[in-house]
Image 1 (cartoon, rainbow, N blue to C red):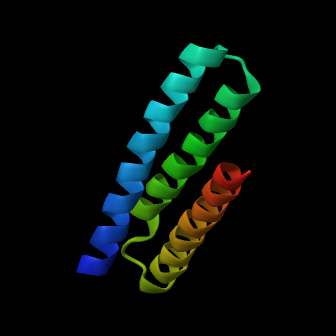
Image 2: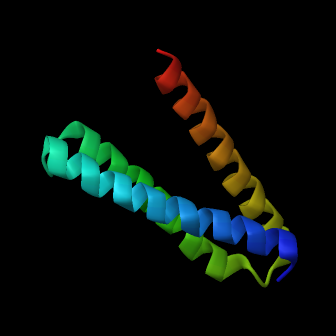
Length: 88
């Protein structure tokens, strides 16, 4: 596994942990069945799914490159979404 892929994997793990903590805080503040909690849970599920797919594709270079592009796109969309929410 190259350094670049290791960096993306660490970013992904960091984001999973951040999203998990966010979901716990949101659930404690708004309830476990609130829309906000469910949205956080779905986002966390997607991150975990991406991480699990990593294990399945890391040995296949073509699929791995597609995986890395999806991870980068996910982070880009999260950054755009975060900026949009914080500027409103």
